[in-house]
Amino acid sequence: MKAKWIIAALSCLLVMALALPSLCEPAADAAMPEDSAIIDDFIENFRILAAVPRQSKHEKAVSDRLKAWAEALGFEVRQNEANDLFFDIPATEGFEGLPLIALQTHLDMVCVAAEDHPFDPLTDPIELIVDRDAGTLTADGTTLGADDGAGVALVMSVVKGRMAHGPLRIIFTTDEEIDMSGVLAVTPEDMAGVQYLINIDSEQSDTVTVSSAADATVVLTGDPALTDATMGTAVSVAISGLSGGHSGVMIGEGRCNGIVALAGILDRLGGELPYELVSLTGGIADNAIPAKAQAILMIDTADRAALEGIVAEEEAALRKAYAGVEDGLTLAVTDADAAEKVFDADQTGRILDYVTSSINGVYTMSEVIDGLVESSSNLGQIRADADGIEIRQMPRSSSPERLVEIEYQFRALASENGLSISITEVSRPWPARADSRLVPVIQRIYEAQNGEAIKVEAIHAGLECGVFYELAEGLDMVSIGPDVLNAHSPEETLFLASIPKTWHLLERLLVSLEE
Image 1 (cartoon, one colour):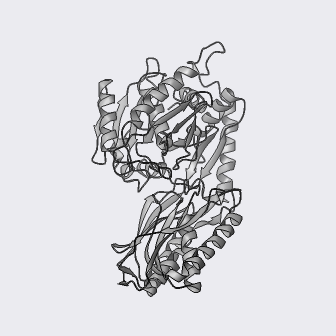
Image 2 (image 1 turned 90 degrees about the vertical axis):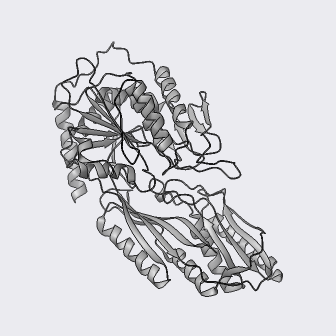
Image 3 (image 1 turned 45 degrees about the vertical axis):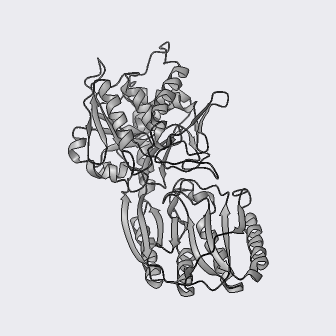
């Protein structure tokens, strides 16, 4: 009922906004900046980012680079211990009386490379592919980093003075993709005087986001219980070719989790032929759906054909179950290096029980917003080998009660299977504001510019806005951004035509808000 009330209130605000006098709309013959020039400047900025490795938890270099860049433009920049950056930009002449607005984006990115593509995220730059004919910006074999390089590049153009605006505070945060430690290092003093915040971290140019879910990082650990291997043949059983993708935005698309699927196959194998587990690994980030996973097993040489037959059956079953979603799915059995030590049978069973029984994927759907995932969890990473056991998950929910429910199941399963568990809250819930002044203004501007209504939505993902909401006592905020497809995967694509579209919306918005 609360969500319905919020939507109704927002609709009322829109009606009121439409009844107000014109919000400084440009004259009909006023020329907007050439879209091609906007795109060119955006790409120039994005190249600066792409040249500096900026995997989460490793943003010092890119923070230093942007600090020097802004200081060269004459701004006084403050860099905190988390490598967040803060600096103010005076209002354009004639707009000094407008309220202080914060433009906020994050510097880090999820680094994922395609199969067999050599890439070290700590040292290698992102190789950009600009396809003017297709109107796309992609990367060569890796994630592009448009989440949130697109937001950073757009803000860089604003900083360079390419649009009029009132007083601005620029905030570049770090480590959004892992645990939001960057935004958690922001203080109330950093937000002093800010009346509105525009987060540029959304991935649909026809949408304004007004609410987001809370999420948490769940880490399970255990000491390996090893025994001597008794079987003579080592094989790798691997699943690959999956779509992967963002575990919040794409969790409702029915994509296959490689770790969970492979654990299910190993569980079946245990009932049909003997094997010993050497290792089980997969995933690259807590908030990315695992696109591949691998298990190293010791088996009897005579069982190799039977193993291959079971794996072939499982591949066919998975292809059927995920037809049209995971058409690149592949299961393979190959030779591996023999191991002297393996997990004992009891601990192997406990590891597989946790992975296959744990909540994964969509858990509940919203009862008030059609099509919105309310609660979910993603088993993002696993490493179980002779050095130790670590399983990482990211549950999300717009319902605090559902999040607690999911975490309770994790704790119970961990206890049953001899694993230690720690749960850390990552993002905060960001509730929609029924009295938002930003939302109706954006609705009015977007419709005037595009001839259609902008979508107003809540998302099943964590945004930094939740922390800012707490920091600044219910700060009026929105999240916008250009069109990005397949974020957190090597197929990540940014559509260039959406850059000027987002730019013009921001350009009008920055001179349309009043005290």
